[in-house]
Length: 249
Image (cartoon, rainbow, N blue to C red):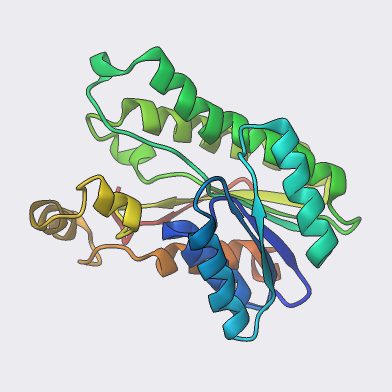
């Protein structure tokens, strides 16, 4: 059983989908969790209520990860309510899928602002307030950095940048006893995927047929991998990318 008792985690975009699965898994392992949201306050509050109802500690923290001022406030609120954050999970992301030639400058800016700049800002702020003993950063990438699906050039390129950042920061922050890893989920059944029409009979059948473990991923599958990487059970792991994808590459 992964043990995160005494730890304080901030999960960006932690109120729904994969983020909620991560928040729930960290709380179940004993961490106090700050559940960040940018717009969907009810979802974040529901995630917190579920954690508290199961005996855990959690609060909501509002903020856009692409805004330096918002990021500072997020950490200040988490610190005031729960104590210094020693576990950062960069899950917040925006996405859309289209042929390469249809990518617009505005959509490029939107995705890179949240998916890449947002991670720079949260990591910079995390390092300024991390406890003396160090901590852990887990970035959420995508298995598409390996499978390279047509139509995903923009989104996957942001996650490719995030994956490289993970490895560089592992080297840069290691002397401060800060471990940095990434989890790369495969096709996962979430509200967002359903809203985009990605979860339908045809797509599910195709994914299941090409996934060695023979099913669609669930948010909890990703949460379990994040909890493990954040824990002392992974104390000798940094700069790595773990595929939580059922073997799908």
